[in-house]
Length: 206
Image (cartoon, rainbow, N blue to C red; front, side, top):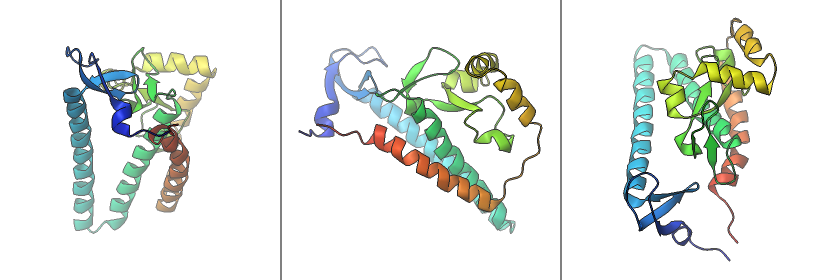
């Protein structure tokens, strides 16, 4: 028997984000989050997405004004690839509740609050969308600690002996990816993302 999402998600309890207790909450992964904190988190996500869209739009407009349509198309494809690939990395690492553990510390959060971290910087285009090179990370490790690379390297080495060195060697190669290749990559990644999103974002209720 299916229930509405409101019935399923509405609960009363103590918020895990703020001191509010015995208040109406929504489930965010395994956590109970009060309505005010939910609103704040949702607003922050919307602002971040809007800022990203504006940056991409402004860059594209600048490139078009300069008569460089290919550069504008390429930048749009790269941003689309970053978005889709990041979701794949985070969703693949999520538990049945959608929670993800940071690869380089003990932080556990819902996948929507985590980031896609790179061992070798994503400026190396050949490894920017490499599953060997990317793992989910919290904001603290990925941004404030610049990737927390020492822990990143140690964990990669435990996973696959020699992997960090192989990635560092591969980063030395000059790689160029043309527009048709970027379009094909985006098509392939979107196909990989669909079943993951269906699993976590559209769960069946019985």
